[in-house]
Image 1 (tube, rainbow, N blue to C red):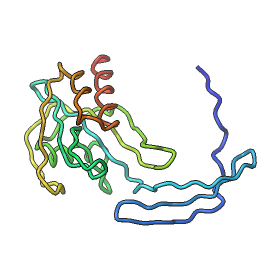
Image 2: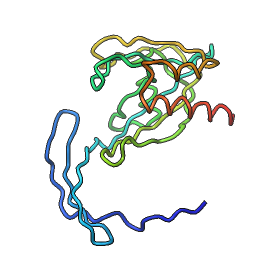
Image 3: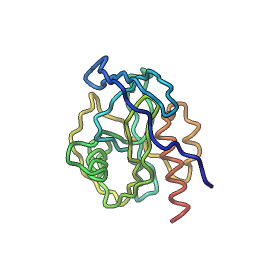
Image 4: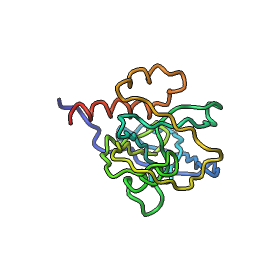
Length: 186
């Protein structure tokens, strides 16, 4: 299938930081498109390092998830372990560190399922979704404000995970479906 693509992104005429917090920088952009149209946009600038989400599978064929507090929805959500990539880390190194911090296991095998973007119209963050197996016990201290609850979910019952009222994060849903596609191709 061939798709028509735009030849070049619009020209950034002006860029101004309009807000900063500990986590986010908001940037206002004045753009000019190739047809001469001018528009104002705002975007949230990420750190540029990216993040990882890990879909760990135990030797007992159980998915390891975490239940943790989410400030955006002010509730507890069930999802896969995740975190930022630290400076100098590869996605696999970050994934192994996050696994050890959040679920108490490292992994001997990683496969990248897909790199995804989140709300690309407004946010320039990217996340690597990785499958992990051949787990071994190892705990690292994490930066969570309270202990995370580790939930084991039988891989054979993966479809019922989609109906759980606290399994709503789009990246975790995508990761689960990407894992199924990966395993079907093995």
